[in-house]
Length: 65
Image (cartoon, rainbow, N blue to C red; front, side, top):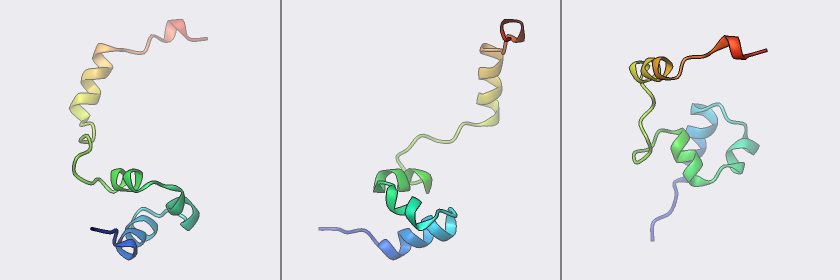
């Protein structure tokens, strides 16, 4: 049976991510691993992909307000 290295996870979450202890303990292990960029999650969106989406779905300021 494998366990969690809570000391390392606390250092990564509290010191590395700047979480408050209450924020750290409110996370599930899966949420913490996602925040830490653990493998298996989706890659962050690239600037090129963001620009592609902006072209495909432009803001229409005439419809606002």
